[in-house]
Length: 374
Image (cartoon, rainbow, N blue to C red; front, side):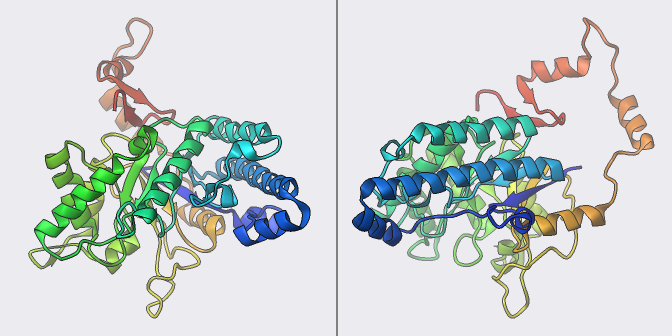
């Protein structure tokens, strides 16, 4: 199957099984009050205990994903609470017994690799690499770097196989070519201020309104940026945002499958992580539906689709029931085998030699996952 399903942030099924399977987080106000009442050490210990609980829950969710046939998980940004707040002066080394947290983070990585569940993370709408307030940009750089550090500690590869997906969250000053180019130049300049691992993981998403339709994002942040800076950003597609903010060329709307194909190519052989959702209603087009009305279409590319609906995994498993058996038929397997089989020589199939000669890494499911050296 080309269509892979991904869970976003939380598991409704695990929450229903046990109310303790919920992410917790102390607000800055609560932390300050506890610190003033019981002392800094008491506040730090409570923060540490909550983070440890969230990290252990993350491991449990990844386990559940594989047991349920879900191939991808978008990490919850609330795992670290105020520790990930760029305006906080706290560091993980400030917490008591912080080694427990580092071990729990590494367990996330071990579980994800063992279970074959890929990971991503997405900052919220307040994370901006362009803003009139320089302090906002500075905080956003710190936030993105923190998430990349998290992925580093997990043991994820330093590339877009473990992406940090970002909405631009800012607009050009005017709707003309020069303004778009100026915006892109500024964005690229701030992007280069990120840690190297964060730069290698960042992908950009089309927006539900404003300048950054799928086509404009592709035109300026990928094509123009490549021509001017020798670097084109990888792009992550959101189907609902494409519908709400359609792409147009000469006043003609660009078809969904064209945008998906263009975005897919920007990942250069890595299986992309896109988002699929539906509107709750015509009156609330930007509110996400509880579940999808039908399985995600197969667009002819292998894609990991984060299913962003309010019922989370309950909705995904319902789709699996609708899809029925996914095993390839004997007739199809025979046809593929006849077309690809070559005589075994030197104790391995020539098909693998072709992959080796192309200098590629092949994932467990046989799909090319990432080109070496990128």
